Image 1 (cartoon, rainbow, N blue to C red):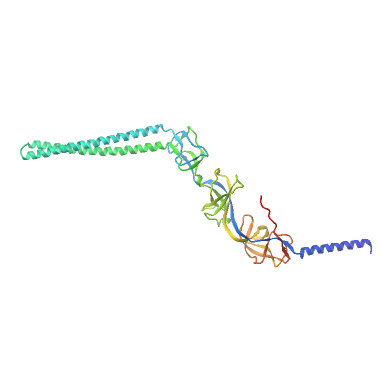
Image 2: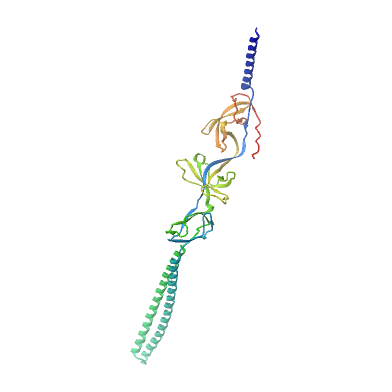
Length: 391
């Protein structure tokens, strides 16, 4: 046999041996796999995007028309309830209020005079009554004439009429006082309308007019918000919003502070969803409002819906044929690989799914999936890599 032929045969044998070794490794050698271990107290959260908004917002202005002569607040200022924000030129209205006050004082003086006239008329009536009674007695004893007695009786009747007239004057004076006081109250209230005050503890987010502006009645001067009503209005996919209820804890991440999380709670769930985007509107209130919040800022929200006491979790990449809360996973059973159809529960924000059924008690869930998987192949569970602490 020639030397060349021997070399060729040796090369072929070497290739056959190498192929056999590779086939043995692929088909018969135990495959090293990592498995997922059950975890305790697994927090399930729902993610949403939204913006910082204020539930209580008001555009405030004067109830009367006038010229703006004083401004005491600007954008960003925080004011307490009753703080003066602005004033209109009130000189003309102040004169009307002063005239109404003078009319009230005059009406009060007229009442006092009418009451004095009543007292005078009552005194005259009492005197006329005494004289008339005495004359009537004298007529009976023929000491005075009948004519004199009749004159005394007429004087008594006239005095009684004066009493009635004076009493009527008192009633008129009292009515005049009521009208004058009502007029004074109206003019004073109108004068007060020339001063704009904060209706509640507020923050000014906009100043819409400047000094010298001629304003119409009801025209807005400031936009105010109640800082205690600031929350995040978030939009949650309807398919993930079913377990959200009012009072659930949440975390808020503002776009301007990506490394800081603010605690909050679900304050309100809107009864009407967005029909186009199929999203539910959920309001998240801050437990402690940041001092320098900004309305309209984008925010991420993470709402806790449930805590799983113990859960077996599989990453989405380890589930074959995922769909309709079902899928197929690889397991290690009695040292060999197998496939199991499983039912799925909650999906975590990191992409892992809760396995709720289909994995036997003594089986181990393979995750992640290595190459070389084959049903029945021997498998050896490798130690999970040690995770380095996050910096």
